Length: 396
Image (cartoon, rainbow, N blue to C red; front, top):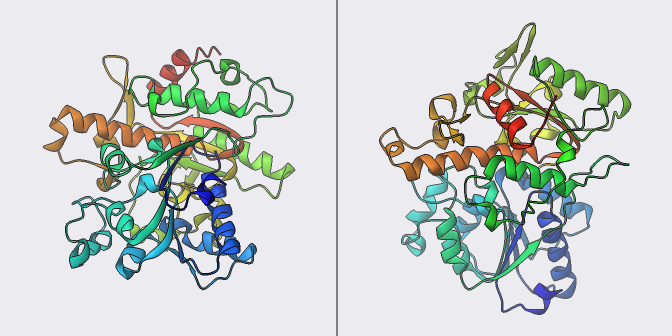
């Protein structure tokens, strides 16, 4: 209501994963279209969510010719002015640079935007009112707009915060809540980074959630055979809840080539007699028709912005505990060149810190996908398990 009543103001809607940023977006669009059929509205989404967004608005019966749903690249290339622009996951808007997909950089060849260095700048020029959904902990690669630049470009925007967790549903009958889980994960990953002050973090979270050891607990972890144990756990849930969408997810720690997705004989994860492959596509992965769709291991690029029922998450060796007892990313163990700085750039401690944040943010995304439960496994990373047990005072 506040946004609707203040069409002359721009907004940044800050919110953790699962606090309803996308729900707010869809309701805003619906309200705008009901109140004024004359206003042109654009909704900018990530490529892996474009089709889903279109389907959502169709379900709501929204077929207005004044509504455009697009990725930022398509939208900026089109170059049309809009009354209202709403951007989902604005923390992932692209910046100009060598780590960017070439198609994302094409917009700067347009004379109108040749002086821009990221996608947010032209978006601001194309809209009378801008509304940005934002989470500082979900920028996951160097190609994303930097925190400092985002703050600079939105310094005049109204800032609002969503604080209620809607995705994660802590088990019934437990004294802990979904907020206790999210605060615990934040503390585990970010306690030494200085980022928690920019989020809705409560240090007084109930740590008993992480110590509970029964089948109905929301959180748990396996000390050995992570792939086998997580698969068994998810399959058992599926037997009782066939409507559930369950998946195993992982950090980017096993090699992959884009062409692999077209060949279901190429697998990437191996444990005893089990072999699994990465997600065959990033776009609309949850709804693909592959014969082995439910067996594929999901990457962060396939699940950002996606809700799952139960998830298994493999923590890989790309995040380790350094000699100072703090978490630090390991470039050689992270198999995605677009997420990395060059060897020369990594000599700068600031770049090492930023790279660590990208990897922590990727795990934060993976660890906040599950509605009904999560189990962790440690893929060649016993050091992280011990770090987690010490940090959250878990004793087994």
